[in-house]
Length: 92
Image (cartoon, rainbow, N blue to C red):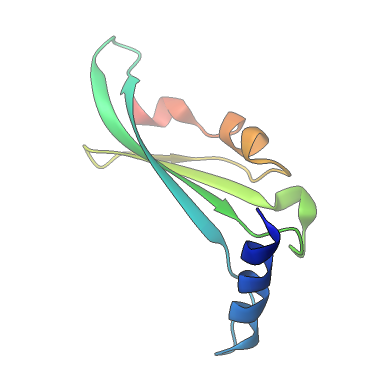
């Protein structure tokens, strides 16, 4: 997250009683299920920013399949760690 994004998050927190805000990045991907068939998923990575109240939980991820199944996991200090903690098998 660059300095401008950090400033925007801080600005959003100032208004409307907002106390928890994340920047969302979204990706579309093809994934192979355990049975070998492919399906499309959307992966959302949420970033609470460098000023997050709990830096060890700055990033979280949710993956959603086109068939309605969803998977998430514990948050992490990096996007890579949060992605590694997603319960991907819930999409199978």
